[in-house]
View 1 (cartoon, rainbow, N blue to C red):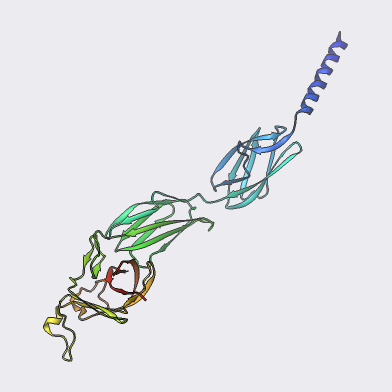
View 2 (view 1 turned 90 degrees about the vertical axis):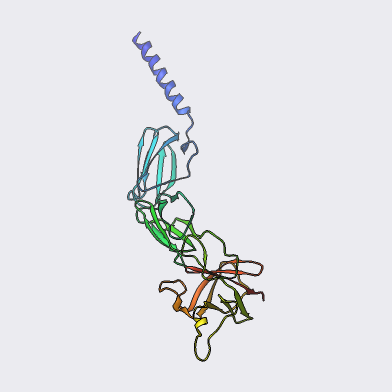
Length: 315
C-alpha cells in the first residue's frame, strides 16, 4: 500500500513539473501599455504591474544616484532621486528587459497663458508652477511696461503694470530642458484713431494735446501742432503765443512700416518746459518705438508710455 501511494505521489510531482515546464515564457511587459521608458520627477514614486517572464522578477538600476527600484511580487516600484537619465534592467527566467529612466523637474503649469492688464494694475493672480525649485524666469519687456517678480517656490507672479506694451515671460526648468511662455499685454481702454500723440500711462488712453494742424515734409519729418496756425521759433526766440502752443516734431518720416519692428526716431519740442518732470516725452532726443499697427493712411507707433499716430510713406 505504501509503495502504491509513493508511486502516485511521484506521478503527480512529475506531471506538475511537466505542466510548469510547458508554460510559455513571454517577454516582460511594463503595465498595460508596456512603457518604453519611465519619466518621473525628483520626488515621485511610480508603481507598475509587471507581466511576462515566469512571474518572478528582479530589477537593477544602472545609476543608483538618479533613481531607485524595488520589486514586490509582480509590482515594480521606481523612485526619482536626482535629475538625469539612467537604465533599469528587469530579469525574469531567461527574459531580460532594459528601460530608460528619466528624472525630470515637474512640468510647468499656469492658470493663464495670456494676461491682459491696464496701466496701474497691481495684480498677484497669475500662477506659474513647476520647473523645479531653481527654475528661472526671463522677462522680455523692451518697453519696460511692467515690473514683474516671480517666486519659483510658491509659483506666484507679481505684476505691476505701468503703461502699454507686450511682455513675454519665458520660464526655464531647473535642468534647462523645458520652457514655457506667457504673454502679458498691457493696454489702455479707448482708441487712437486720429493723428497725434497719446499717453499710455493711465487706464484710459488720452491725447497729449488736440492736434489741429499737421505738417509733413516728405522724406524728412512730421510735425504736430496744437494750433491751426503754429508759430515757430524766430531769431528773437519764442513769442508769447508760441510758448503755450505745443508742437512736436517726429524725425524721420516713417517709410514702409512693418508691424512688430522697432524704429529709432527723434522727438523735438517747440517748448518742452510746459511738461512735468516725469512726463514720458519730456526728454528730447532719440526714442525707440515699435510699429503696433499699419492702417490705410496711418501708422501707430508705440513707445515707453506714449504712442504716436502718424502718416507714413509707401516706397
